[in-house]
Image 1 (tube, helix red, strand yellow):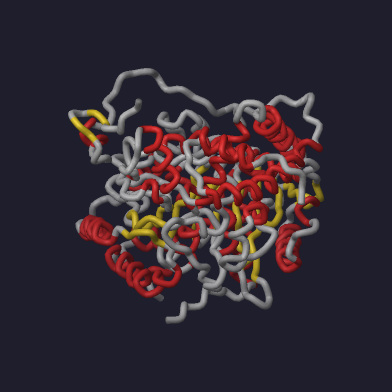
Image 2 (cartoon, rainbow over the protein chains, first blue to last red; image 1 turned 135 degrees about the horizontal axis):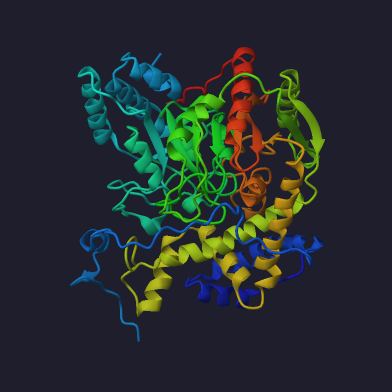
Length: 97
Length: 492
């Protein structure tokens, strides 16, 4: 078995960041799987990239912006119809505090 | 011959020459779906009534002598990651169950404007995350060549619909091989165009710097036919490229003697199934016979592509999938304490295990203290991979290699070991990292199990015409020399 890169508390912390709730069983499984996967990912360190710039846009012919002209969007009613949790043109959510 | 067995290109010729009834084509397709899709499970849902109605409209136009659009009734299966107005689109995920898009993706608008008929939405790995279709929240699609095997993923439903004559052509998407891998496993043509060639507007995002819409078809010309319609700049997608769209069908012509081919040694090392190797080498040999100049090339950093690909894909996924929070659409778990609790409960019950795994790993790779070691490092490695391709494409025009190291594997064989499953994408994902186009073309079958083998044809960015030309020349050779095989009809 490879070196342990992450532990249960790391999995719990990441779940909290990602707004996910995990069972104890899932946490155990992910600790094992994530260590295997991250150990494999560490392979990248074999490649010297000190002089390399990171890719931000793969093809430079891309990235175009259209003129900022106001135009109709989807009608509000059509969009609000995608949920039952709505009232007076607003989305209804549980209490936040 | 049943009309559902037609190639797209033959359908188009016949419909324009008034040689068939569009309604009969649609009826034959649904009769096939009724017969075989209980076993193959390619479709998540079908659009039968509307499809028949649209077919009758086109038939009427034909009999009235009216002008008909280029795709005039061409029946298309659509991967469930592409938004279709009025037809549920849920990405094979519980979190989007019941989501009926209020708009069409640009590709859907384009094919509908050209007269195509949407047959239904095809199964996939949830949000495109998987190589076998086993990560669908709803059903496991089977491979028509052997129903105990996977069809490949993530556009497995689309590949099977085409392979099993349940559609004439299909749309898929490809982030790390999701069009080419299932095409290879199911023995159909699967083309992933250059990044930026096709608009992603209305395509539910997995990894935005890699995702691209592609086509799955029964012939190379069918792929060209679809490319003629779906490509082009779209102001709704800021990554779509302002480059001219050629006539891809006229690229399907004789003679490849002006093209220089490269075969990367790195793709033929350990891990490659010997029968796959043999079929691909035979295809390369035939390229030489057709007058193509073939040389060995090297992509020395390719072994670092897979971890870079997964890190970038997972990081982008963790960001793209943050919007699924239960507030505006899709699933919401109402039994909660407060807003945060609603987010957590909704996301945890709405996403499947592989999606959660990727969101978690992506979040980790982007989190404070780890960003440089993982995400930034992966983006630097991506630059190195891109430079490897740039270098070889100075001297050659086309790369030839296998689409997958192995033929279709058994259902259940890899699902419990995510890392082993990830390795399935080894030969396809470098193309996505470099933004290049690539196509899988059936080039033979394994001896004992009779499973399709895919040859991958890769070109420089925006040179899909060369890929199609090479594919067209090879395909004609196979049509003459290989015994034409069809999947066995399913039992029961």
